[in-house]
Image (tube, rainbow, N blue to C red; front, side):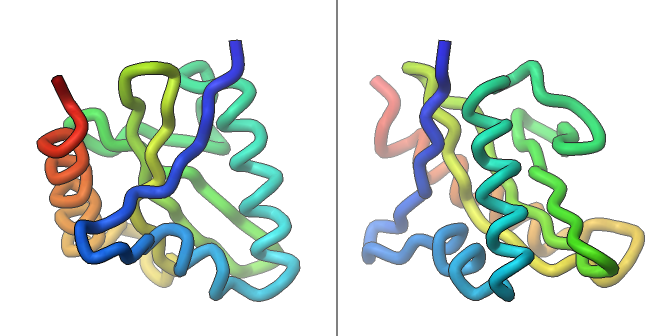
Length: 116
C-alpha cells in the first residue's frame, strides 16, 4: 500500500510546507524529496532516524544534509494521506514550541475542514 503525501493549504491558498521545502538549498531539497519518498512508501512504519512522533498525532520528518538540519511536520489522515504542514531549519537541540504550535494549528484547521 502506498501513502500519498499532500501539502496542507490554508484557506487563503498558502502552502507553508511546500514553500519551506522549495526554499531549501538544492542538495537539502533533494534530500527532503528522497525522505518524502520513504515516507510515502512506509507511512506510519517509518521510524528514527527519519521520523519521530511529536505530540497529538503530529510527527516530524528529519532531514539532514552535511551540518544542516531541517524538519517538516506532518500527520496521517483518512484515505492513506500524509499531510505536510510546515517546516523549519533546526538550530537548537529542542524543537521550537512556536513551530509545533503552528503545525498543530494547521492540523486542527485541516481536520476541521476535511473530516466528515
